[in-house]
Length: 423
Image (spheres, rainbow, N blue to C red):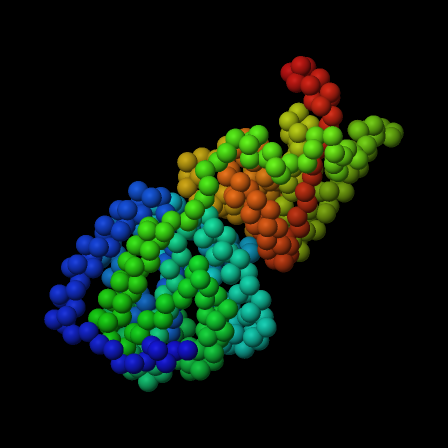
């Protein structure tokens, strides 16, 4: 696979000086257009240690307007990141629509490193790549452009480059560069497995020969430019939102068809002393959350249901039994401008609790297939694909050991009306 990036291609100093000004002008123009088109761009910078990835990122900041671009370097995990699903650190730094986010290291780094150092076998690496494909598919379907750059360097050149780089006082060397150089073949094998499983039509990989710095930089810049131009010329087609009646006419079940909610027994009442039973269950819940905190098991509780069904009251009775230091209640209202500038799950990923803590959502990601669908705030394509996206999201939480509890509070239309009138 990597032979195509070992052809010895070079660019002379004169040629670089001739081509660079036009490239920079074109990149700035493309950046302006993608800002107008509100396209978020994720640039993944990966590759062999010593290939000059940091130099390329610095070059991008020379060529592009840094006001519309942010770079995020993922070195060692922080405690906060370590205690959450690995996706959390990336979701919270995704660029808003119209901006460019450069990910120096990305969701590929940890799986590839683990395989190179023998912590993973190929099967485990491939499993992680399935999750990566789902993430990239989700972001692309939402309109994002993902440009994945892989910078390759032959082993001999890597050895020479690393010897040279350590003497440059301005160079920020990777803390594991030396370890990687000793495991070059293992790293290359792990990288090939990852690339083969994630080189898709929507998110292809671009292998860039990096022995010659000028060739590397020009190729990276031109690759980014062409990817942006193609995306602007062929935008992702997301149909405009339709009114609820038109959008759902052919898809909703007939009004007289029984649903699962019709099976809910609305005549159930608490037997015995309500206050006494409530206190008993609150003491039980308190002990369970303390035990979960000690075992570093985090929890997510989702409350959905009809207006006036009592979600707020139920949440207050739960929080009355919890230690205020370990829980948060997130009240979900209409999205802010910042939230609308990202994928709809972004606002929920941000609040995923660290190990041992509890997050309670008063309304949640299900709004995508409830109020946003009914009111026409989401297009048909958006809410239809969100069912799978929600399942994937919750599966990610479950696989990371997070306890997910979902509650639907149901009342009859008559009871809802009565409560509204009482208010």
